[in-house]
Length: 243
Image (cartoon, rainbow, N blue to C red; front, side):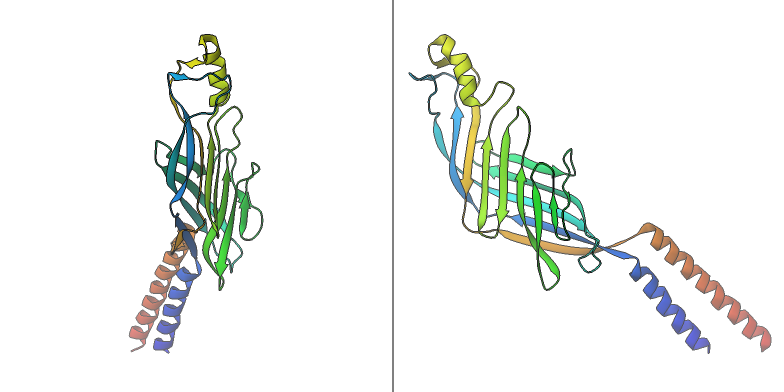
């Protein structure tokens, strides 16, 4: 009887904490090299036209992304904990693109889909009931500010960027400043003004899963464990007295 009690207590002690474990899934994306062009507005730029085509240069770069989820598909309790992306490009075109939760958070739009009111979306991809990656479309929506769109998909990645501020884009600023001095731009160099790059081969997702024990459940498990020890100690004392 004593062995049965110890065995049952051991099983309960093991099952209790395990039932309290939640899963944290982390997805890391490394994109392949994209290529394209960028434009810039150099200081001292001279032209004969009021709305000139800006100088162009070739650009290469890659997209990286990170997503953290809590919960599981089987329990239907997935939560988006954090997310972000960045573009690392040549010619001074590196940007941290998106990090959240932020002022326009991405929220559940379905069991495996998350979207924001500004049009940014994360759609999880799965295989055999497990998360394997995601398709992403991060879209900025800043009034009187620079805009970008970064897309990560099964057929490749793309990234576009447009510089702007309260005075408009690079072309607007050139027109405002240069017209007064004969199509000569004396302002600061703006690089980049635009970026447009893409590729046709998707990158790689790395997925890691780690257990997360809820503190309240862990405390409950510890209480249960200590209570079990008290029960065993009391039983042992009664058996000793009987002998």
